[in-house]
Image (cartoon, rainbow, N blue to C red; front, top):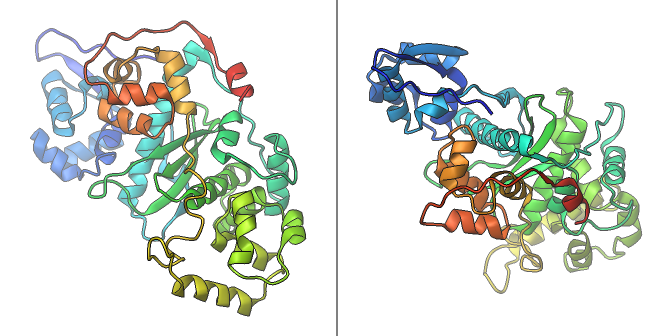
Length: 401
């Protein structure tokens, strides 16, 4: 990792600020360029040119004004970008009203994860990536079966912990808690490729209390990673949904276990065993010819009209069995950070290692990880000296789990 040193001599010195870093600092906060320019005391047109340039030499005083306006360290703005994720490279399981600014914000989150992994890489051996590259001619069900094989999942067995299965295959998963008044609220999950060579898969999933929605969102993004790394034509969302259902519950098992009399309660055993929502099971059965159009509509009407006895909510909002499992949460990002930056590292110390990304954003990222170290480092109040551990091999540790 290379971070440019900030000169300590007079304000006539110059620093090189990078357009991508300016954009990340602004977009992750959903700030408008005009507001940043006004805070920094510069014209909006000049600031826009800075963001769209690869890099620009500015006076040290001006660099400090930009850093103050963005509330990001000057060291961040002067660090050469290493994670070339762009908006066009993100794929989504998203609502249709996801705005461009929200999508830009997710790009910045992806770059944060990429920067952390990049900073950690020289210190340890990262898990081997095992997501297959599926040829365009392969159907979504076939792609799901091939991905099961590559990830070491039996062709007909349930996937007990989907996120852990992906992490063992070298997929980084980030559960992100977005503030309701600031951050993107209109997405379920996204996927992309990080690393300087864009060769490390990342799934970002919105924090939710629905275990069913989380599993389907993650499986959906796995479909994008396997089938759509290079391809952008076709009905990608439909393909990803078909892939997700097949990956969680192979159609041969579905046909064998499908109930003779299809009711919501008759579908509950499949939901519990294979970890799919009733809505996903209805669609999976319909696609495989096990359910007619009229039956499908009837089941959806029942879900819209019936209410959960415990919560009073309609079943389309909160399905029965919503407390049967814990919501899956990732740990690989935290394991990598702990091994690379040290068991006793603080957010402040990690910030200095990860291109001076602000500690509160590192905290949000690590709060979505379920390791004891992540809980400790995000809850710590008093800063402690970073303890940089020696090189650690993660591959054996993750292979054993």
